[in-house]
Image (cartoon, rainbow, N blue to C red):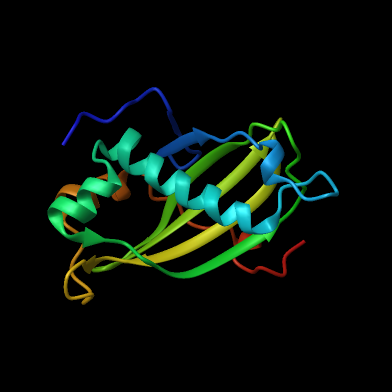
Length: 163
């Protein structure tokens, strides 16, 4: 495992770390209205997940799956589109952990452009053995990183119907 990069980390209001990454909204990512086509948001979420592994945890997610035979497939996602992402935007994505179970992991992704929240996404993944597809305990070496980015969900953000 590599040493994680501190370059893209910050501290939350609760005093825990927050992993930060960026994306570029490219021409091919937008619909005829000029806004990011909604399925691309799920790609950005997964890219942020992979960036978290490589840049924060210090292990390429591909290698975790291929070499360790540990995977984190998504079991649930909840995405609120608050403001359009447009061609040329470079959203800052703040990643925190809101749930850390024995084998389940809840991550939150907040996409911001110029301080304005555009997307608020919450995903739940399950740690599995990549050969048997059975759930397994999140390895301790990785669990510690998710503990460092723990942040409770805001009450007004718990419900997808919140304005």
